[in-house]
Image (cartoon, rainbow, N blue to C red; front, side, top):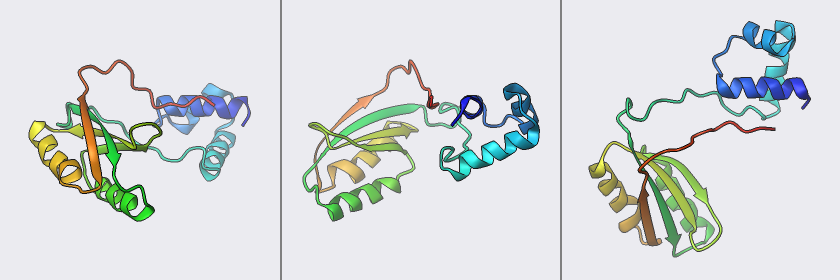
Length: 150
């Protein structure tokens, strides 16, 4: 990646809806050259998805929780099955396997405490593979930046 590719990525990560002509002007390229570069960045897997971020409050999902989970069975099948179940939960927005005392960190975007309670029972309390889980509710968000700098 050269300087222009990095500039294109920085601009697209701020606003992926920017028109190609405007993007080309900002990075000093002809529109056709800019479009070729964007297509190459996608083909090379550098740009993996283009999404629209939404306001959690306006979407009715303003309650955010972070759950740390310790698993009993770390075998491939038990872990894969539990993760597949989590993937079906609409409130689950992020899942990370991590090192340390915790095995998995789960980020939830919830409508309310009732939804948390129901999900908690299904995914954590009633699941034989979950040894322990701890929930932290987000009180304030100080930074959310999904852009990556190359």
